[in-house]
Image 1: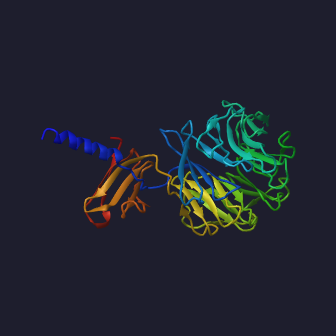
Image 2 (image 1 turned 90 degrees about the vertical axis):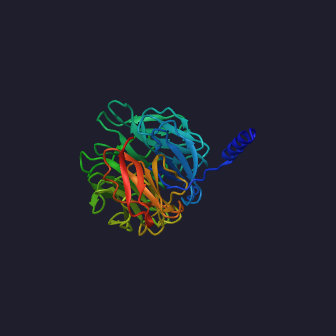
Image 3 (image 1 turned 45 degrees about the vertical axis):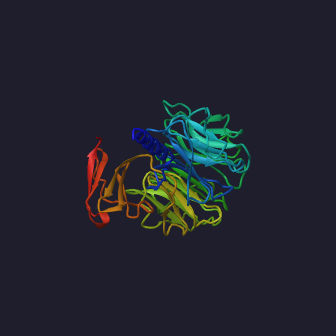
Length: 410
């Protein structure tokens, strides 16, 4: 009998060692960066917020239906992803600090690259392999605006300083038809165009409101003289490559704007009202409509349109990746495999073990009635403002209609 207890303990230890944990969600997270591979639009790369851990890289090979974890960045703050159009598996990433990363293995590992200054937007040149354009600033203290050019896939850079005024350049774009033509925009209504691959830059801001910020740029793939400039004050459109601009009715506080390729008349934009909204245009940006009532999202700044089908677009959000296949009429989350970085507590319905509630970061509570096969976001928990949902208790009733949330950090 004395040998029975140790033997039983050994069996329990062996059984525990062989136990497997199966992820059941809820899926999604605060996706800070999102990029579509132009060579294979079914391939998507995303970076999820991981504080206090470092940012996590994810990859999808089925247009966002499922995601697989890849590598980890060296800091919590990473965003601004871009896929190289010439080299498979080469991905670039920016940060809000001074860091710039390259991955040569589709996000499994990320190498820090020294740049002349903080990079806020990077755009690989579709015409010339190895050439990248980037927007940012030279001095982290006074944020002197600059554009950067690399001819060796981001290993080394040259810089062009625009002027001595305060404020960074925020966005850059490359002309889809004309080699060597690039654009850069930023604070204080700076908008410049280069026709010699970044050697010289010419002011194209005439007609735009002064003291504003250019945060979004899109060049029409069929007619590159049509350019959209998204600004805090609204959307502006040019039909002469920035020689003149006109304000169009549509989104304000524009974050991002992109044209479709398969149908170049289609354009998408991210704008802010009381929350972030997606807007769609079918006439190269002349007029805009809100793309569906269910597109109220938060913390979005990346928007990609499938080059094979302009009805298909993806957007990042604080709950993960959002995707449309019908030009914005409906949107669905495409998150399976992207896991929340912080789930603080779980509440189980004593009367129904399949009914669970999970408290996640940013005061979000999710529920499932089928033991994690599907999840839904619960409304009404934004009233938890002074802390986080540190515990959940569910009344033993069918459906978990009564839930108690405890607020705090203990």
